[in-house]
Image (cartoon, rainbow, N blue to C red; front, top):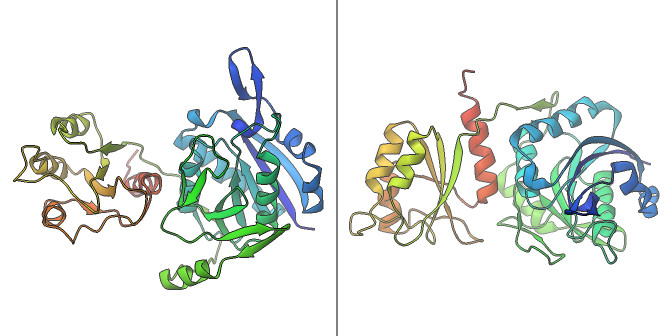
Length: 323
């Protein structure tokens, strides 16, 4: 049997009822003990990293998660990270980009209901995650509702529905059917098309993150000085959630924000556009408003989620940190 390490970080999956509402209270060993079927899948050991509602997860915690994998790398065949759902898409994207030469599976999972609640989705999600950790190819993934999603493509679309996470602009990796992972041939075709490099060499954790990044959503009537305030406050990167396939108000609009974008770019701030739509990404070379914005220094974010773009930009800016 494969030997898998569960890295427990808290979240709804580990929550218990208190006088102040649900909060993490179960440790990793207790999670495993309450789902006996996990013992049929692999040999499991646990490490208690933190007990946090994922609302409180910060970039420094991503570094702790990645380094825990690295510190235990030679002793296990794969890793499962139990995590709260609210920021799990950020964490899975973070480790997806932070870990180079990864030759083992790292699987994030959580649940919409605590393991202690009747009808919880936690047992099924844990079974999916450990099955993936024992059978999936190397990489960072998110396991939820019987599905395996590439780590930088996951997005939480529902606050209560068990099918909470969807794969955005990337085919699902696999589906758990009758205890077996059925891998998606469309995902294999996706990998072949995108020429993902093979893993080789020693595992590297890129842990230099510059967190001076903000996500800003445009609205009709958006006040352009908001961007200027961010720049003056020390922001070094802005993920700009634009209209449709790349619409940014320009010179023909009373809401023209191109001058303040010029100001930001001249100050060395990177401005990256992503769509407010869920699917299909930005295509800024299609309309005049997008083409003009690119001429003013806006970078298209392609079809990545805002979560993935935020983490990716933090890492790219982190490479330039002098501290």
